[in-house]
Amino acid sequence: MPSNLPRFLARLRLLPLLAALPLLSGCGLVVLDPAGDVARQQGDLIVLSTVLMLLIIVPVMVLTIFFAWKYRASNRDATYKPDWDHSTQLELVIWSAPLLIIICLGAVTWVATHLLDPYRPLARTGPGQRVAAEARPLDVQVVALDWKWLFIYPEQRLATVNELALPVNRPVRFRISSSSVMNSFYVPALAGQIYAMPGMETKLHGVFDKTGDYEGFSANYSGWGFSNMRFAVKSLPAGEFDKWVAETKASAEGDLSRNAYLDLEKPSHKEPVRRFAATDPQLFDAIVNMCVEPGKMCMHDMMSVDAAGGAGIAGIGNVRQVTYDKFAARGTAEAARWSMRYVAAYCSAPVMSGDRPEPAPVSPGKLKGEGLPVPNKPARTAVNASSATRPLS
Image 1: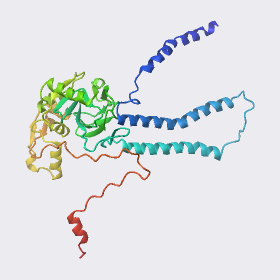
Image 2: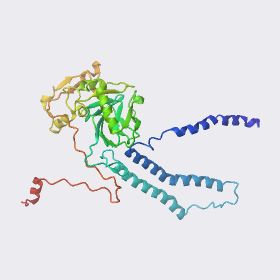
Image 3: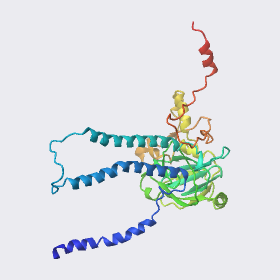
Image 4: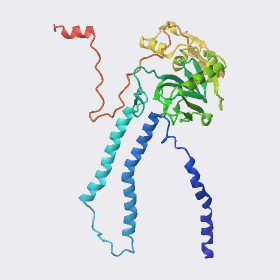
């Protein structure tokens, strides 16, 4: 008995941990119990995939224990066949079952990948609740800053920092970008995550079907202040959302002009909730095109110049000194002064508009075995049509 006392005392140390297990029942599994239809379908996909994989994992674990027990050294009644090395029947069972599971997983994943494409407009807000043809989604422009989130509401003409409010049962269309490095925009209760990248625009469609307070964050490491890159998410009834818009406008710090954005863009962490008026309808597109600085050429203008063969010898001197540009050209060190320039704007083309047409809403029904519909072929132009009917000489 004394020799077993240390082992017994070691087991007693585990009792507090066992007593704390019931407390885990209070943890919220937001991924599997979200407040949005898209996130709920994604959670169902996780559960279905897990169940399909357990159809293989559980029998394998049970059979492992069964064979270890049946063919133990002390069991003299177990069949002993030292020369056995093959069974066609067993091979069929061992390989056909995983193959069928893989086929099922592939089919489910392929269908869900298309139906839950973050770029596709929503066709429903919940099971059996189709989106009306005349319903307009709420546009929210998202910018990942260092280390905070900026949300611009072009329709409401306001902007917030680290606070996202959305009306319940109204589809939301996010246009997402970043100011410097890649981040990942993720609201587990609403929809899946999608990357925010500088100089690029990604999209995400989602909808809340429950009201409440939730949380969003960056799911991609982006530097020193990454751990505090979280924001509050509010799902509000339509009337309360309108009230929130009015209160936000009343408490705005000022207008989010381009100069104000450049100050806001500078790295900071643990940034409190801030609210602005947003009267510049092209601010987000200027952020995407990296031309917020006054007088700087936008990327789409530069690409137009490049597509035309360049600006020629006259463009060599078209550079201006800056004090605050993207990280690759910021700073005051003499060694980097040669790179502290940018190409000045001389094109008259406006910044790309955010009113680009969206694809038509899709049917929420299950895809059939024949797959997705074949895209429409481009219409033949009059020139092509005439050339097609012209006789060969």
